[in-house]
Length: 243
Image (cartoon, rainbow, N blue to C red; front, side):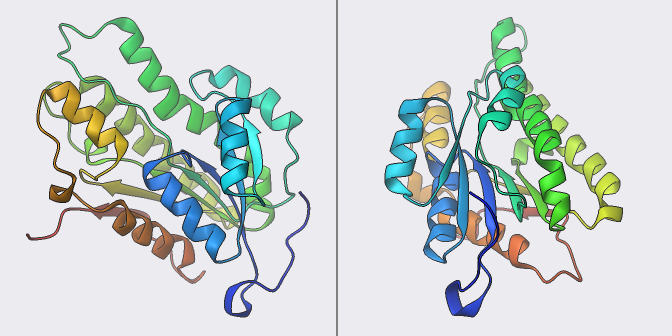
């Protein structure tokens, strides 16, 4: 998977995007929107079976096979993958959540969420940053309202997402001189499979129509990615609208 090509939607140059979390929810819809407009995708899959599913759904996509629960394996996966020389964006949309009081959360609930939600994005970004710099691209983190405010039972998840905000803020200052834009999107509660799992953990009935449509979050992400080069959306909060 080399080069950048030409002749995309409405004459625009196709771009190349590396996405995590393309299997469901916000990441899935984003992959569909990008593919529909002729952009190239590199999709992270946790194993070969998941990669086969993604490449069936996105035939032109290239897989990057690695389980983000094991950030120490990312370097080998990147080295083995057929990567383009330039990445117009890296979008970190993968995430896991496990709720519980601090008094009750086991150690692995902390380490797993920090690994997937924070350490893996940091390591993947580090490894592909030269490709982003090569085309003055963008790194976009799909964070959460929990990355700004922590509520009871959300300590571990919120800690990982607060850390993700810190990662983005530091990276933004470091990479601005190289022309790399860094954006964080903070969606409120969104109607995704993760939200269904949260409600199951909370013991509450789940009514997806009460929450943000994931397509609206994807539109916000695309707005940040497509913004002309003279500006950057550094932080974007997406909240439920009036009902």
